[in-house]
Length: 238
Image (cartoon, rainbow, N blue to C red; front, side, top):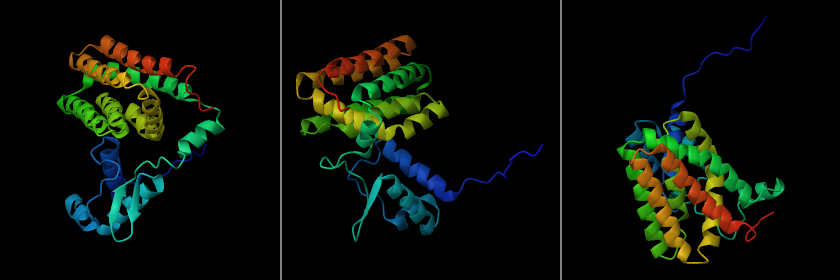
């Protein structure tokens, strides 16, 4: 029997550069609209060639995570409110609603919170708390805080220390960002909901810090259920 076995190849250096920059975006360390270091500086910092940096950035451009502006540099892509998200189009094609998206998040993120309570370290907790503070600042400036909210949920995913869960959440990132943006836009029509969402985020972190897996699961479930209940009968993008 002949098996389709292929030689094992070492991971390309440009793949490692790509992964590192992408993770900085996913974790909220690089924010929408923020300019990346020039190619020369990135190459020096990562100890790789400028060609390697250029290859990684082109992949990030193709993914829609960054944009290059002639004579200005490379920037983390901003969400264009006048342009319908490709994910929104995909959801419409699949006849999927925000409610469907929230049901998927319920399964992924409740389990993530439970695992984070068991496995998170100080860096993970700091990332969660920083995201909450960033969200508060954005709201004070009259913005939705979508990036910070998404970073909060991604920080919990990283805290699971489960490489498969992290991979799934990375690939789910665009859906997560789009869904959170739509959620906040609807929820914040009633300003009282802002304090509720922030409080729920604090409760999730407190449960994770307390190493209470069950309470962490419950706190996340309460948070997502609150959003689901709000949208039932109110918002449907089918």
